[in-house]
Amino acid sequence: MAAVSVKYLLLWPLLWLCVRLSETENSRVSPDDDPLRPYARGHGPSHSHRHVRDCLSVTGGNTAHETQTPPHHGGDPEATVFVSKVPGSSRWVYGHMTVVPDPLRQLSVLEPGQQGGCEGQRRVSVEETARAAGCLYAQNAGFFNTESGACLGNVVSDGRMVRDSGGVQNAQFGIRRDGTLVFGYLSQEDVLDRSNPFEQLVSGVVWLLRNGEVYINQSLKAECDETQETGKFRTFVDVVSGRTAVGHDAEGRLVLFHIDGQTGVRGMNLWEMAESLKSYGVVNAINLDGGGSSTFVINGSLASYPSDHCKPDSRWRCARHVSTVLCVHRRRCQPADCGHGVCTANDCVCDAGWRGENCSQECLPGFYGDRCNQTCACVNGGSCDPVHGRCSCPAGFHGQTCENVCALGFFGPACLQECVCDHQCPCDPQTGSCNATLRAETNYTLHTAGRCLANQMFTLWRREEEEHREQPRLTERSWVLLSCSLAALLSLSLLLHLLRACRGATCQWEPEGLDYSYVPLTHINGAAGKSGFQLDDSDFQDEIWSPSRSGRTGDDE
Image (tube, helix red, strand yellow):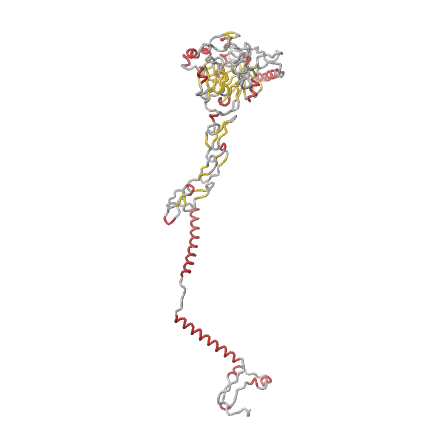
């Protein structure tokens, strides 16, 4: 299909505005005037799954359905709008294609309005259902009874079996609990299988693509040629109309396909839609409800151009109230996803020490805590406990963050082992080897400690030597000599003191046999004082007695 020009694209917002204006009055509703029913009586063929399997055995082998286990893709769903020319015709079509990277967690089959909608046989617009469920994108899904409003076919919504068709053989689309995508015809046993139950399941009509090839002819045989209200089953396939479909590509991503149209006027037939899906790389796909039911909604707002007229004013177009809806939403976790965490409404909340969308990855080295968003403080090669952030130190280190080297004489993990080297020499703090080259800072510590220890030892030795040295003792002879010496010295000292005392006092000396006495001149009438003549000490102390004077008496004087 060739893409249309930008000018043509600009016309579609005007059409959308008209549709929105048509819904401003609550009284305007769709009269279901653009029906597209595959069967006239009831819904689905009356034959068994065995008949279908035998009918398809030539091309499908023993299986009547295809499965695809998608890898776990990241990213958000993305919708693309297109206006294209249908190859081999003059028709242009407007539609949407939505790619869902993680179908198990990003897509749900919804009942009309809310849970219990099928049981209550309700019909609700896609807008209302999508807005209530918070869908990013939504389109109509399964068929329904236009008179009673009852849901048709199989319906499983978020793991709940809503409706069991009883084995009716129409094309099915489902997602099992392990994420496996299923397309094709299912037996009653397949639908009710509890070993790997369906999380989502909805019935369509006509298998469009099987393993990348158009599969409509085989579907005509499998789903038979019952007549419909507007013609034969073949007419349902061949008529141009609004269409919706669901499929998957080679990477396991789900593809939702929507085409605006009006039965017999515009849109696509199923052959054209199958070829279009094939050109987009879709591998397996089934057709869903179409005609006036074909609706596409973005964030709760209508984004398609309905074909049903409004009543009571037919100048406007109104979106039809339908049954089930395919809702594309933000990623939701499954309980089985969160191996080391808890599944909440939207995602997994991981236990401390675990990370990742499904909590399957441990914290990277150096990180710990919830979602591994806290940084460890361990140094020297210490490993961090991913839960609490405690450091586990390697051999040779200790401390809260492994910041300390083992003290001298200890080694090993947490420095708990004691060295066994000769002479109590230190060992390698990591291995305990006595023949080891110590680190520079350790050598410096040893050198400083050695000097300090040597000084202390020398001081201690001196103190001990002085304490144990024998005190000198004097002999008896030494004591006698010492006592005599002291006595002599004492006597001499006394004598000297007496002589000194005599010199300073008046002494009269009268030697025996002499008839005279010595009187110092200083005592004679003060003569010395008058004449000014004085005798020195030598005159006083050293008088010379001569014989010439020996005969004189005191009277002569």
